[in-house]
Image (cartoon, rainbow, N blue to C red):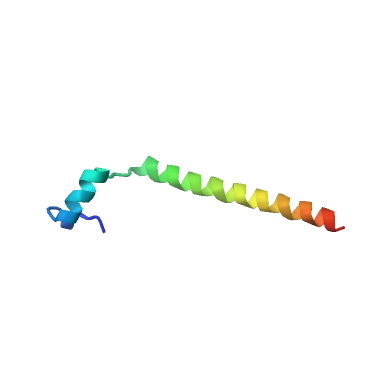
Length: 59
């Protein structure tokens, strides 16, 4: 887990050198939740259309 308690340890220093520091603000969280919501809506629409198309072929 990346916390300030790990500062100064070899693994933590290497992770910081590789990825840099990560800070997510409130708009960043809204963006993540927006993407998750969009993916959920698109998945629901796509699966609904697929089921309707399949049922139309069965009848």
